[in-house]
Amino acid sequence: MGNKRYRNQTKKKTHEKKKTPLIVVTTGGSGGHIFPAESICSALLKNGYQVAFVTDKRGKAFASLPGVETYKLMSEAVARRTLFHKGVAVMKLFFGSVQALCLLQKLKPAVVIGVGGYASFPAVLAAHLWSIPVVLHEQNAVLGRANRILAKGSRLIATSFMPTKRIPSNIPQLRVGMPARNQILKKENSSYPPKGNDFNLLVFGGSQGASFFSRTFPEVLLQLPNELKEKLVLTQQARPEDIEYVRNIYKGQPFKKVTVESFFDNMPELLEKANLVVCRGGASTITELEIVGRPAMIVPLPTAADDHQTENAAGFCDSGAGWLIPEKGFSSLRVSEQLAELMKNPKELSIAATQSYARAMPHAAESVVAEVKKIIEGNSKEGVN
Image 1: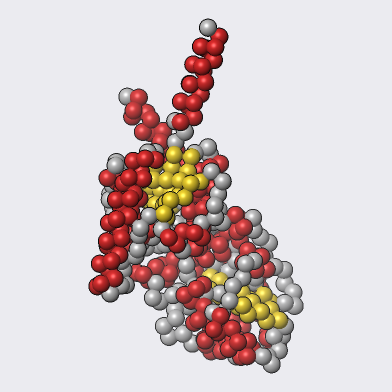
Image 2: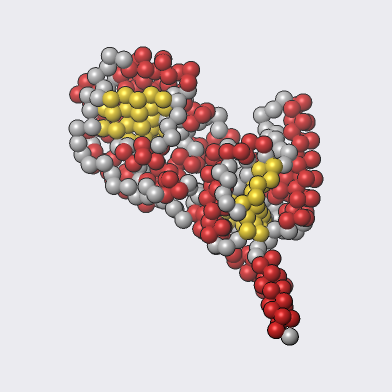
């Protein structure tokens, strides 16, 4: 009798364990998608959910989190390709969607979270076909192409910016912010560097944008008056092929210190030390500026899809946290004069830093999880009825 009761209790516990909801998170392999996906996965795990990550062949950048199974499906971007390559991409998306249908049938997730990019297309499409609730997260201030296609039928579009353009009027949306990596969250609302003899200027443009800063921004710095050059501690990102070119331009200048590298693995620390940042307008970049609380001169990448970097930067700069500088018509003299004024007015930069942090949403990943929880609980109540 006792053994039977024990077996029944064991079966009950096993059954309860199996009922722990599984959430699928899906996205592509670029840093702008991987970082928020990792943050969402971590937040889901902390809240007791099972998590599976679905990506494409580029998803190897995803940090292997304990307890997260990773699956790779066929997928490829369609936009900006030749007709032939578009055809190949469409075929890959088709086969990836078939793979995703089989995978989701096996996993039976409670919710699928799409974090953008064409790599999210197969799993989100399969979720729609299986009537699995879908939450989309949009990083940029303009709904991306993949998310535009997948929006119909989604329970919610969680946004990083408000407003976010091109969201269908009949789809609920909620601004939650952009999930950030833990290294940045540890630097949340860092004290603005006190007035001193050094002026720390951080210049970076990412993989697509660094070349512009390598070729154009040195002219800005060369036109600064010598008394400001002598205070300048410059840290600049440049593509590998541009490093020697940039270093040679700065050689012989009376800058206090110059560091030019192709990659910095201590970006959170560099942001913390910076008096001012010069950068592109990617969603991750602006999010990190806001969380750390740093002012920036933002030069949006003009070739970004739907000019989303300009839209990303607009709210940040309109709030007084930064200065928007279009690449078209860029004047090194005018920007140099603007930079000189800012270097002479640390109070203005400090106020801008405060405005930057005022926009921060450091709990974005937890907000996404809270919405997922509402969907699961709502479905559970519907099932009871």
